[in-house]
Amino acid sequence: MFRTLIAAALVATAAALGAAPVANAEGTYANCSQAHADGRYDIPQDDPDYWSGGDRDGDGIACES
Image 1 (cartoon, rainbow, N blue to C red):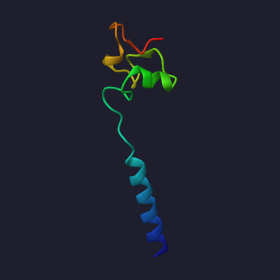
Image 2 (cartoon, rainbow, N blue to C red; image 1 turned 120 degrees about the vertical axis):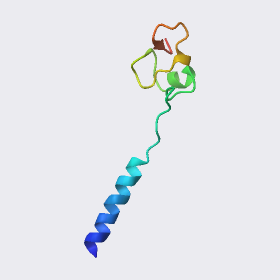
Image 3 (cartoon, rainbow, N blue to C red; image 1 turned 30 degrees about the horizontal axis):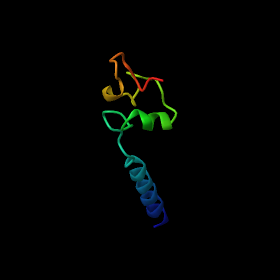
């Protein structure tokens, strides 16, 4: 009985960790003001937080300083 309880607790914990929010495909920030408030400037195109809406001049860098 005790083993079953421990196994159930481990499964529940694993499920809770797997339920983390998924990042938005267009970046995690709604705008550069949010990124700057988080200390993010000059976000390169290969960064998961990059989004084309934050790249005003199309050079592959979003939220330039």
